[in-house]
Every structure is written in C-alpha cells, then in structure tokens.
Amino acid sequence: MDPVVFLFVLLKSLIQYPQPVADGLDEETRLRMEVRAKHLEWERLHLEQEMERVTRKQVQLLKLVTVAVLLVYLLVLWFIGWKSSLRREVDEEENRGANEEQLGNVAAHEEGNAGNEAVNEAEIAENNNDVEIAVQEEDDFDDRIGQVIMERIQWPVQDLQAGCEWITNLMDNYSLYFCHVLANSFYPVLQRAIGVGSAFEGWSPREQDVVYRVLIPMTPPRGHSFHLELDSAGQRQVRNFRVRVQLECTCTGEQQAEDMLCFLHHPEEELRRNQGPSLLDTLCTGSYLDVQKTARWFYQLVRAIWPALPQSHNWHLVLLPSTRSCQFKVTNGSESFRIEMLFGVRRDDSAVFVSSQTREAHTASTIWPESYAVAEVEFFKHIARQAPPDSLHLKCLQFFTRLPLGFGFSTYTMKTIVMYLLNVTPVTSWRRRDLLERLQDVMDSLRLCVQTKHLNHFIVGNQRLPQDINLPPDVQTGEKYNLLHNLAQDPHAHSQAIHEYLVLKKWYKRILLAED
Image 1 (tube, rainbow, N blue to C red):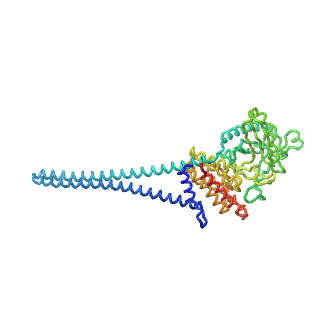
Image 2 (tube, rainbow, N blue to C red):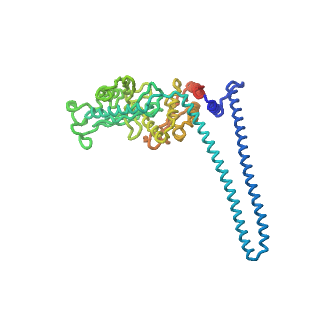
C-alpha cells in the first residue's frame, strides 16, 4: 500500500473520528500518537519553509524600496544643482525651468507609483499561483486516495445497462402481444412496462442474483372502472389499498362500443351467450381485484405468448413460483436473466402506484400496498442527468448495500440514506477525489440513525424532491414515517443494531486500510 495514502486515510480516520480508549496505551493509541507526532513535525517543517519564503520576499521588496529611495535622492540632488544654475539665466529661462521642474516632479511621482504597482501586482500574482498549486496538489492527492479505494473494492462485473436494455426489449415485445391478445376481452388493459428496482436504478447489491423488476400498469377494460380505497386496517407505517371494480353503463354516450353488450342493462343469459365474462367474474374476489388471481393470469399470458417472441428462438423460458407476481428466468446457455413482473394501478397521473409487491409475510389477496418504486427510479434518473460522467454515487450505494450483507441493516435502509445525501449534496461532490468523504458521510448518517432510532421514508412527506417527480398531494405532504420504528419499540433490537454498526464499522475500516 502506498504509505502516503495509508497515512492520510489513517490520519483522517483517527483525528476526525477519534474513539475512546482505555487507561493504558494500546497499540492503536500508540500508532495514533506516532502519526500525530509525524503530522506535527511535517507542519513544523512546512511552517519553516513558508517563513523562509516570506522572508525572501520581504528582503527582495526591501531591496527594491532602497534602490528607489536612492534614485529619488540622486534626482533631488541633481535637481537642486540644476535649479541653482538656472537662477543665473534670464527671467524667461527661469520660468521655463520652473515648468520643467513641475513636469519633472509629476513624472517622478508617476514613475514611483508605477514601480510600486508593478511590485504589488507581481506579489499578488505569485500568491495566487501558490494557492492554485496547493489546491491542485490537494485534489490530486484526494484523487489518488479515491483510486486506491476503488482498487480495493471488488465491484460486480455484470453489465447492468446491457441487461436492462435486453429486458426492456423483451417487455416491449410482450406488450405488443398483450395488446393483440387482449384487444376484445374484458381483462385489464396492460400498458408498457416500467423498469423499477436496483438494476434499473443502475446498481445491484448482489452480482450473482440480479433481479430485473418491471411494473406493468393496468387500466380498466371497457365497461369497467377502478376505484382505490384506502385500507384503514393496515399498519400505520404503510399504506394499503383495495382496488374496487365497478361496472359502467355502455348503452349510450362515450361508453357505447360496437359489438358490446352492457353488463348493467342486458339480460344475463344474453351476456353469457354472446359476450365474455366481466372482470368481476374472472380476476376479482367479490368486488375487489385479487392479486393472486391476477398473478396466475399473468403466468398464463407469459407462457402462451413466449413461443411467438423472437427471443424464444435462442433463449429458454423457466417459470418460477410466486403468488403475487410473475417471476421467470430466461437462459441461453451462457447468459441468464431473472425477471419479476409486478403489476399495479397508477394513482391519478402520478409516479405512485398500488402494486402487487408485498411488504409483509402474509398479505391478503385483495390488498395492494402503495408503491414508490417508480418515483425512486425517476429520482435516480434526475440525479444521472445532472451528475458528471465520472460520478461515483452509484458506486457508493452499491458498496454500502453489499457491505452489510448478513447484518441487520436492510438494503432499503442504506439506499434511503444515500438518496437523502444525494438530495442535499451537490452532484459534483461525488467524484473520485471525494470518494473517501462521501463514504464517511454514509457511515456517519447510519451511526446517527441508529443512535436516534429514526430514519424517515425518502418519498412520503419529503417536500424537497425534484419538481419533475409527480406525487399525489397526500403523499407529498403526508405524515413522515420512520423506517427504523422497530428500534424505537424494541430495546433489544436497538442494542443489536448498535452492535452490528460497530462490527460493520470494523469491516469498513478493514477494507480502507487493508494492506496491498
């Protein structure tokens, strides 16, 4: 390991974030004292050099002033002798001599001022140049530290961008067949899939187990309408909805459709004989859209349409079990993609959905939790549009979501902390030279959250989000809820979280200070 880089990292870690020690001097304390002594010695030498440089400048300036004084003195002596000789001349010559004297004084004064200004400008330029050189040297040093840290971390080699492009192309092909197959049915109308989750945000906590998630918006078919009803029986920390399906009259007006019988005003026998069943009779339990029935319907669609897709010629489809989504894997012998198709209903025209994704272990089949996955993807896209090409904010996020694997800190907790930092820290401050400071910011934020047992949800109640992320009013101004509420309710969980943070901190330092 580069000794200078090691000294700098260790110095920042020990001086800026000192840890309490016992009465006896352990090895860490002794090492910190040695580092401190070396740092003071370096500062003393640097100060002596600076004093020598300032002294040299003062000597040079004194010499210039002395020469200028001598020149002025000689000029005054010459002028006195010249004036004495003029007194012996006629009055006209005396007047002309007086004018020349005045002109000479003005010239001498201007010459002196010009000399002083030149000295001042030269000194200012030299000082500015010294400052610029010092700043550049510090930036280069920080960039070197960032490079060393980047080399120490084992980053995933999978190309997430290429995978997302392949999945997007597959979903677009599916959408074309969805429209064709469901054109004259009374099943939900499926819109174009939206990529959500870590992979489409540009990072992944696990290299070998990347899940490409897509959310497929559903709108009601002809003669139906969706009505979202808030489920008050759910937990206070989350918002759950039910999707009530209601039949609409299609006899007259805008709802009238060719070759369609009105579910409300035509006899049931005629409807059964001449028209397919309504959505209430297929994917609903009572009057509410059923998540599990909808998931089984998605499986049937995916399996039936797959042979018609161009990807089926070179890829093999394997359906995976799930009760609230459609999960499958496609392989071609050398590559493999795991895909999860979620489905949901958009809230008004916002980036918030009620989706099939569950939060609890057991969720009723008619419960649709409120999902902010699309809003979070839009936030990362907003950051990407403003960030410089060499920004490492996704690297920081990926590092901290891979580091706590096996600890009690969830991936979503670390992601929330990084999103908050991205929202308050300029995007230009996430470059390689800033890597050490940004990593330390995440660790400090996690420590504060554990100590206070509090971490607000990033979307709900956050009025500092970018304006291009459209949220329902009750979400944007809603009451914030604590993602770490379990730590506030359970003292044992809080003690465990403190212990896991200390262990995580040791792993973090071990990675940064590891020997080459």
